[in-house]
Length: 212
Image (cartoon, rainbow, N blue to C red; front, side):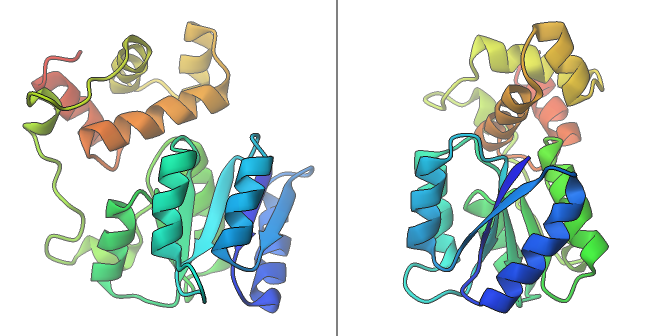
């Protein structure tokens, strides 16, 4: 497992790196102090599994960096960490492509759980937003079927069909003869294409749009 921590505070980076090292015995955690260095590391390491990204940084901030990650490496999951607990900031980060948002006030276990969830192809939404009105954008149920919207590839439809049957990424990988990492990338692309944040929504939209 290879992870990238992006934060402008060295002590925070070191603490996050030590914590994330608990995910797997041989986990390698790279560090960047700003978004520009992070983008260079992402370009140099095609085998990165996930990015942990601070929002408030000098220079290019985290939201702009999110857009760049989405442009250059759309399959790479990004989890935002932030001191903000404002539901509007959570919504904005998710809308710009983040697959998780973890407040810095959260416990260590919360961050580890978020990383595991995202690596399994899901989206982590913090408890603080669950009760907020319109906390997460409701998926546009017409989007998948609307003219001009990018269609899913045949392989993504294969993954969506099995995902909707409740299969895990591992089971899908075995059945389709793919790596788990490739399946995760397909799941991420499906979520973005259908404008959803979890498997249940993806399955629902997929069925309503006649994709599966």
